[in-house]
Length: 361
Image (cartoon, rainbow, N blue to C red; front, side):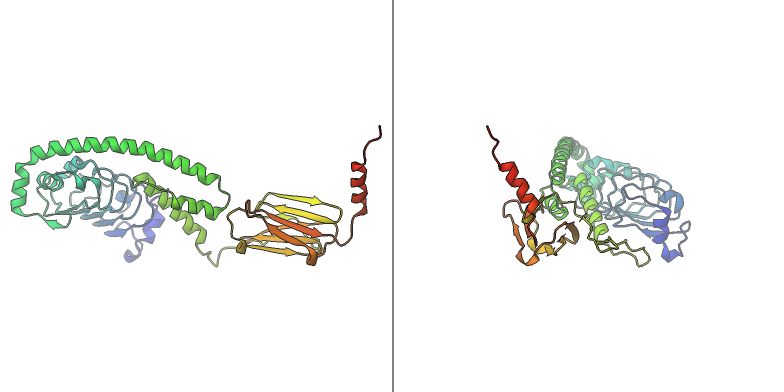
């Protein structure tokens, strides 16, 4: 979970010489913030607070911002309007593309007498019957709703129908709350099943592909999980700072020149020592493209590079690289490397012949 830290706030306050106590405007958008905290204590003079495109689930910890005029929390996970009564100077509130179903929660804004603009576009509540009339009548201080000016005639009509419209809204909310409870249970099961499916996939790229190809619903839980996957993807591909110490490279050979045995990809394998050849079976990922596999057969070792990860195995007897063969199964994707020995091991032949000799009666 990404938190609002003093370091983050100072980073975003360069226009104010990094002084946060006198800050009047700050933008904390696209930071994957999940909880609003500390802002009201550090920046009490804020007039503009931009928190769009985060993962905020609840409006909270804003009541000390008495000078706040514009609050933008578009594209978050907010499900109801609350805890803004203390923002006395609030004149514009943007709640675009959230998950607000409880439309009656806008009644908590009745005490915000300076509120002139309210935006609820993209929330489930805008599809309720008589949605606009209800909000216009409930908040008479508004000049515009969803970027559309409120006309005097519209306001008068909304006042006359307020009682009837409110009862319809309340019933619709109750139905939506039941659907939301069912959705929570359904999504939890889907996420659990998807997690089990992805856990059984060895290849990281295939695991990521399975997540993005899975069907999902539009809800706060899925939006949070998508943001988490995006964050993991950025961390995987972000460039390292030149000041960071370089990763130590793994040595493939001992100081004397002897090749090490190495399995960076942690692939299961089977290595058999026969009389005239070695047999290496390497369990490469089934769906991995063959172009991502590189095999280097040398006289004393074999090296297989799978997606830049090295598998290396050394052997006691020298082999003939030119006479060695490599095959890949079309069913399992496993590699079979047959390494022809330079000299036949007579001891192994003798041992096999003695084991096959029938016992006398």
